[in-house]
Length: 226
Image (cartoon, rainbow, N blue to C red; front, side, top):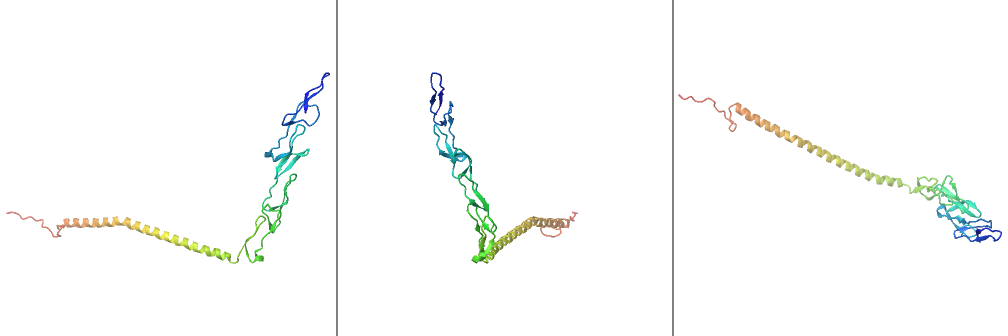
């Protein structure tokens, strides 16, 4: 309640109830009520105790959060629990009051960051396998059967042979195209030489008095008419 009207020499103090969403938690003579606290989910909070006309609301962290600022039995601010990175393990899971604690894996062990302990690297020799890739603090070692490398090489060789065969075929086609282009460019020149030779022979025939058609010499001396 809050003071609605102070007392006078003739009247006593008059009080009124706080409206919804406000409260007054003590008989301190205040004339107004205080707004109730908002437990904002966007800040990682939820309602622990609802607000009444005589008490403020109390908040607590959402799941996955912990209270970073508490006051009078409620939480004023919250933070999300720390997520452990690959290579770390969860040594202490987070609660509403404490953050998650992460520790680094030691040599020879690994963790994906969500486990509560680190696992030992697999040793291929102990199970009759060969180590292909060593492990680190976030992944296990990779193992395979002995001679698996030969299988990889055997699979690569046919691919290399196929590529070389295709390259040889392409080179042969290119060379053939170049040869055809060369002969195509030389053919008009040969024809031109043959035509020039024919013209020369015809000219020689005219100069020597030979008939172009019969090849016989034609007399250029005319008979004088007596």
